[in-house]
Image 1 (tube, rainbow, N blue to C red):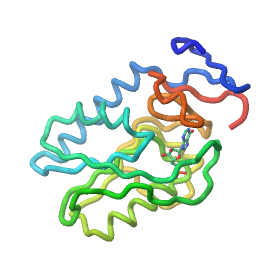
Image 2 (cartoon, rainbow, N blue to C red):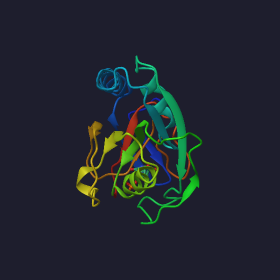
Image 3 (cartoon, rainbow, N blue to C red):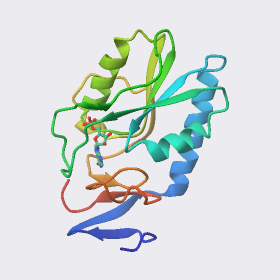
Image 4 (cartoon, helix red, strand yellow):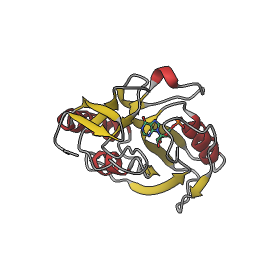
Length: 185
Ligand code: IMP
């Protein structure tokens, strides 16, 4: 496989470049500036959702210009499938105290909205002072849950995507740009 190509073939699937790394870099910087302004003087905790958000998370927090803390949650993933199983389980809980703190969940992608709905309920039980969500990608047409996304990098069509942290069967997270499947969803 050629990691620098605009078209990638994997296991019979053909993926085309959807969002270039430069565009991701530009938008991530804009989000960082906006969030830093909104949370001036507040010391928020950024909660990364493992594994998919790690790359976006690392780039986003380096664009945050105020004091902040970080922690991570891990949820069950799609496994090897390309569509959501409709079930979420918690694989790794938070280590920080969130009561009375400003919490920002950092997601790579929101699809049905199930994972965000689950995390919002879980975190709200611990009485944070505020709770917001930032996601790099949003498949708006696929979202079925009543959730609020406070910061969205890009709205994308309802297509399966890989790269920049997003996987297919745990691979291709290391692609620098985001690629969408051309044949099938
Ligand atoms: P949701 O719970 O249906 O909103 O799905 C969110 C999670 O599903 C994300 O954090 C990803 O791990 C995974 N996911 C959703 N869409 C894609 C995709 O197109 N490619 C790779 N993973 C995806």
